[in-house]
Image 1 (cartoon, helix red, strand yellow):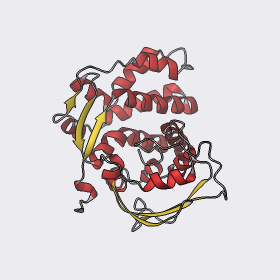
Image 2 (cartoon, helix red, strand yellow):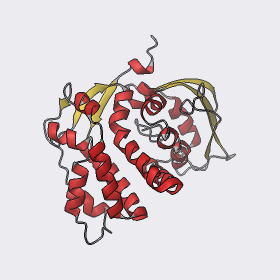
Image 3 (cartoon, helix red, strand yellow):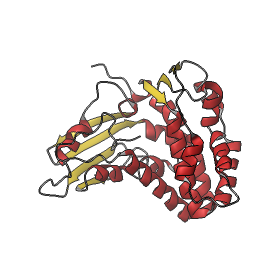
Image 4 (cartoon, one colour):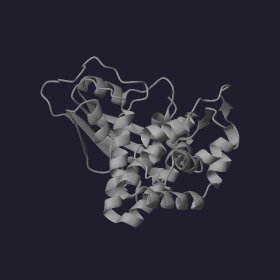
Length: 289
């Protein structure tokens, strides 16, 4: 097979606004509860207004396939379901307007309304679309609230990784097999990572990451919070699948290392997984998102 470096690979990127709505409401809920909704909304609006959108405008301008029927998305319903404890001076309509003005949602809705769209994309470009606003917001949270802000951002990321697991659990052996498997169709993970299998048994896998578009993207755009945003919750995702999994890692590309040296192993002599026959979805929840 011909080697293609990560920065030259593509995969079919599918964008559904509901995913952005859910993620942003998750961030807003946690930040509002910890620091106060009024203060967070002001900061959120400042980040949105100062956002440099030139890349997103160019990236979203053309080349997208549009699904025929628009997605039935009720943002107002999502707001009322997820933010039940809003202060009396902030209405669901206020939150709805805030979210709709947030990049890349504002650009996506202007160009494609509520349609789901698909395009061949590099991992690097997809990561910019996925993370750039949240990374800008995280930087401002840490700037304003210091170490407490950093811990709150980490809490948000942990809950997102656990939520992405969708309750899937399974055996150690199933995890080990699927962690190194290559799917038939390219995805964000296979486009963005070049790995080398060092060692594998039924209870342990050693894997070295030689190229990583998460590291390249964050070092280019958000170097101070790259590890926090992209690497800090890896073990959380593994343990969501099986509580007996542990991770060892002594260096990362994100932090300037020559590789990411993953060792993932079981601390249990016998695999007492909730369902030892469970097979993870094709989009592995314990791989990077």
